[in-house]
Length: 78
Image (cartoon, rainbow, N blue to C red; front, side):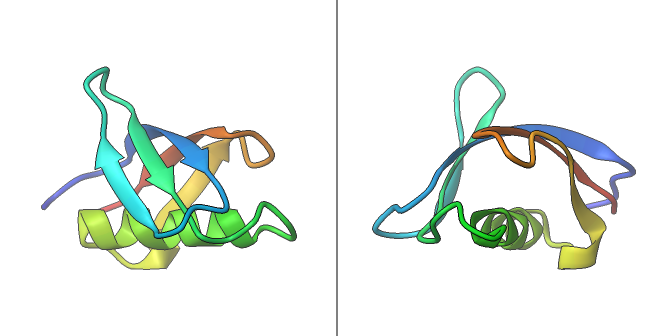
């Protein structure tokens, strides 16, 4: 998938039973992560989920805004 700087808005639900990433009807994504929001562990899991979903390396995914919030703007470089 050839993409250059695609931005997605992700709503994060930490402490979930299982990790998942699904697109919602309004164009945003919902990321359920097992990790708790301590020491950036939930953010790392969100980055891994987004990278796997878009078929890119984790280094190509970055949080542009909302690192400390539940709603994040994430950029995927392809």
